[in-house]
Length: 269
Image (cartoon, rainbow, N blue to C red; front, side):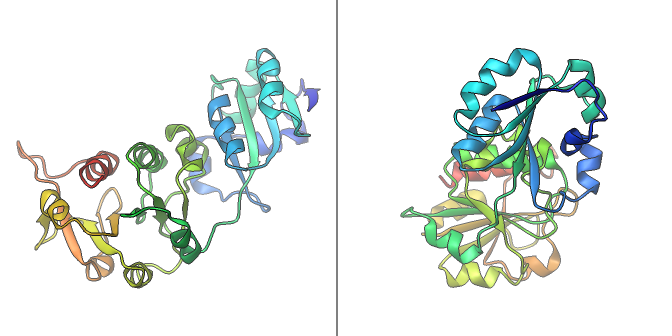
């Protein structure tokens, strides 16, 4: 481990961490070479366990001993800054004391991901066009907790490896296999060819209840969750095998997509 004390928050070696507000993360693509930011020792530990490689780390002095243990024999530059410098650098209060700029792994082809699933009754979650990184992270956490085998994200879905998604997921984005499904919604045909019943969580006409879907007990199930505002797109809806709804009471028409995913994952476990 290479420990460097940096006093100037404008030092170019810290550019990977500069002004990482959530707004900036939504608007700016990751730098060339593929990086993402992991925040907190627990999240970084899970990233390392998943085989991801750190490019550098940013810490406060009190975390130095913990980072030595965390990195082990890895030869990684570690930049030590004050609390004030960290906040000035990143654009937010760094409460967890440690961040890492991680190399982004190459996404696996969908076919390869499906082939690696080792489950007698596999379940997939497909995220279409979600825009809120908090929702994406929360869905991954529920997927990990409730045994979903893999997550697929559409080309327009928010990035699971953005800092806020990773943090909200508590690092479970490194535990649940996932990849982008680049041809969408045409990619539904690939899922169907692999034996999956493709069900969309929808308020559309002809929807069956979640209980009805569970009663069918499909051997392979792919659950699609649409964007926060409009739900599943019409061109996707036309390709579904089932439209599925969670019955509501008290005049409530729907749940937040993260809450709906947790209900659906638990019901179909």
